[in-house]
Length: 316
Ligand SMILES: C[S@@+](CC[C@H](N)C(=O)[O-])C[C@H]1O[C@@H](n2cnc3c(N)ncnc32)[C@H](O)[C@@H]1O
Image 1 (cartoon, rainbow, N blue to C red):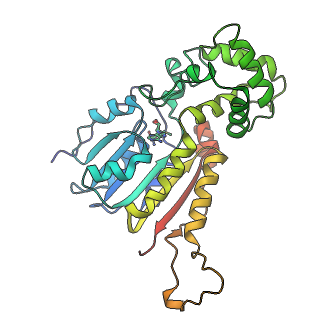
Image 2: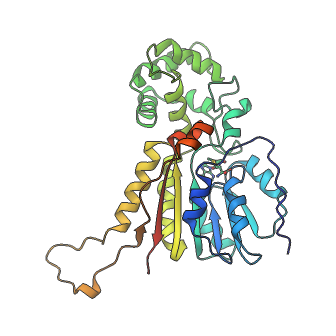
Image 3: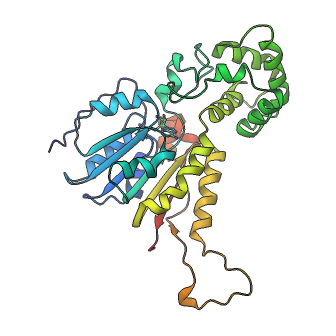
């Protein structure tokens, strides 16, 4: 069996909390692992290093660019699934896998997605306003902005961007598109800059709005809400789920889910149940939330907002 991974990194992504995440997974060399967010494969590569020739790694990514990289890896222990991690249960069943030893989710976007102007994610480069992690599916930011109503747009910018000028920005977008279609990242960021005059030091006026539109276009929070319950049925006893989030909206979902399933299920008042028959929690929290070390934060500014949470599946 070929297990020598030849890895190419055409555009770089520095993996965040790499050693911490791998350690937290507690890898069993013959086990089956899932990397829900392959990206450029930094975490996958580290998982494969700890697996024996009998181990197995199933990696997901919705971005076709990730798929191109993964398919170049000549490693029979790795299977790549081009799709969303919200389809995890179904796609694993299709591969004949019912339970796994560990699941990793390193959420958000990869550096190449942000740094390639044609992907249209960033206000730092001019490009078509796309923002889809999978440009082959769904609606681009340009299409959505051409038709969304001002109330919905305000809600997205306010809720997903935590932007206090949401209403003014939404109105400006709707007014502007009646004059000229908004088709590029530059057009959108210039428009936002004309509205947001004051911003926290170091933050671009467009940061919050771009983040909000990206989260909406890729249904990022819905994806997390859909995948977390699947981890409960997929994980074997003592299997671990490790989640790295990059903003408070993501982290809140993970924190609440872990909290709900690591506390004993509530028993309705008035129902007497013997101690031995009380339902047990499905998860056990492993340590507290972890942030990147100051050295990592200095070396990789992207890691500054990272937060890692770990939970272990209890006996069914
Ligand atoms: C932060 S990067 C992962 C980086 C990776 N851990 C590494 O070390 O190279 C996040 C990746 O997850 C993918 N992604 C985000 N949400 C996804 C989803 N719901 N389903 C599948 N892939 C997703 C993105 O396309 C991106 O490539």
